[in-house]
Length: 441
Image (cartoon, rainbow, N blue to C red; front, side, top):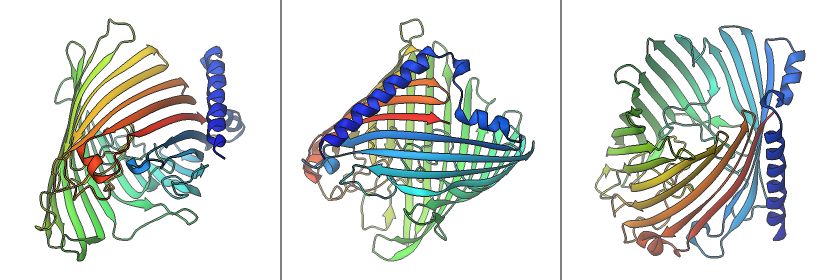
């Protein structure tokens, strides 16, 4: 049994190597998607497609505990169908089957597994990406900006979708999205559906001409959720708003930058909410150097709760993000109660290759609050333990994009526990390797 993961890695690596050699030796014009031939035989108003993704991953120290490893294969299959009755109307459907194999300590449940279910099913009038006015109604993806607050979470095996109504308006460099949504609650073996009363409403804008070579995206997000416990332990209704902006652009001399700041206010029953988070990035590309290295300096902050019993909630809520890799490739740290300092480099040895390396160092923003992972889940025992320094991470990735239809990649991350992790857990260094193949058909 122990040799199965090793054989699986060898098999997957061999398939990746063979596919890479084929892709490199085949002209781009000849790399056909299998569904292209099917669609040629079908009427123009009916289109089919699909995607298959396999990823081998795991850790030898889940929960930072010794001898608590699990290595497994994540398998995801998607089938897509579009109905195009006219140039201004379309219907989109996507079925998704997600499974996990050879696992012993991660569950056969989301985000690892959700056997065949309906992930997307919406009608669109106009075109959300190009038309001045458009409307999308039904089960759909929602993602904005860098997805720090709202994203599709495509990295996970099950991903995320919303039952939503979304209207988009565009005019001369200005854009506004208005939506009312409820996240789809995933349940393996049952039809995925939303939870009544768990709602997210929002306005998300875009301004392209105010600052040269930049886009500013102001937003207002309103979250409602039933059945949340107050600091005194009573069940109550959560009602809070997030107001913020994202600002990204390019500067002279090959510099680029990114800023996002968000504040939150509202209540959970008798508890008040006052929290905020921020992201700042400055990067420099050495355009004349080999591999065109892009050097990155980044800082992320999210407030924490200063007193868990004073009726004032200070922990920043990251809503529904695509948190993967934002605060470390291993995804053991999220945008809640954290100071995150990052340095990194990106290299492009070839047009189809991207190599990245990053270093993260973390501290808790409040020593009275705990450590949260990329999914926003609290690490058990981290609230009551001493030590503000969480630890540090080194990670490396290599991604090869053969075409729009085929991509392979792999990476490795290592977390070196600091005082908090050593006090709250067994303090075992956490590693995370992965190897992934994605292909469209």
